[in-house]
Amino acid sequence: MFYRPQTYQTYRPTDRYFQMKDVILLNIGNTHTQMARAEGGRIGPVTRLTTAELLAAGTKTGLLADQPRLPVVAACVVPHAAACLREQWPERRLVLADTDAVKEFDFSPMKARNIGADRLMNAVAALELFTPPFIVLDCGTALSSVAVDEARRFRGGAILPGRKMLRLALHEHTAQLPEVPLQDSLPAAIGTCTEEAILAGTDLAVIGAVQFVLENIRAELGAPDCPVAVTGGDAMFFLAAIPNLTAAPPDFTLRGLARLAARLS
Image 1: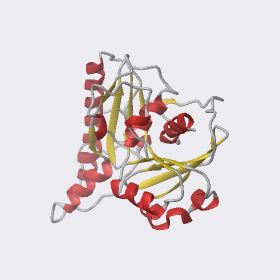
Image 2 (image 1 turned 90 degrees about the horizontal axis):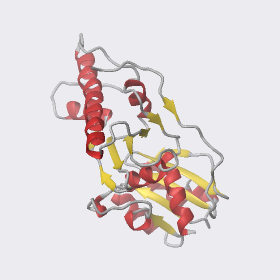
Image 3 (image 1 turned 90 degrees about the vertical axis):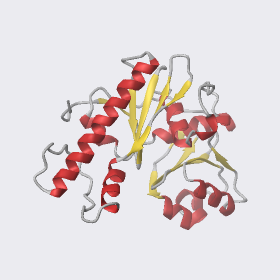
Image 4 (image 1 turned 30 degrees about the vertical axis):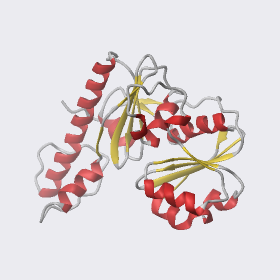
């Protein structure tokens, strides 16, 4: 069964801020990067740019240019980008998030070195919303989930292609199928033309896949009602299509980085 858009839970910001020194936070994804300054414990306005723009500009962009003395704490899922940042910013203190810096969870069930920094910081940020167990679903280029059990063990999760990646796969690996733009509404299950058929086959299928993955993660955690926080650029589509999910704040991954920065300061 596929669910039609409905009211979903929304994160309610509080007055809880972290006591920390001034720092620049970077969430560097495959496609886009978020940048913000954490000043006196408060995360300021978030700037969004493409990761390609960040790599091309280096320290000559945004807060990095305006605040050359501030250290940077980053979650980076692009190894090439991490190497470029180290080369471009030799004079700036740069901390890249990894499992060694995260003290909130037990990583013994995992091959910890393989965990993406964004998934780590999302799990840390989720502690502001929930008491474990919980799940975080990040809806970006890929759809990635992380699960933390009641004992605060980081259990891992699932990674599958996002909506745009599914469309690109059909377009790039066939002779005639077009690349169909993303849309916010759910398509009909029966497409009356090629474009509508692609919408049905990608959007409805990925909703079903996410629902099935979440159901099975909850079963393995032994927590059928554990909450799910949803973040990422395509979050609104899944929040509208799947019931009983929680909308994370727009600066969600940055909040995880802020907690890390507080420990390092």
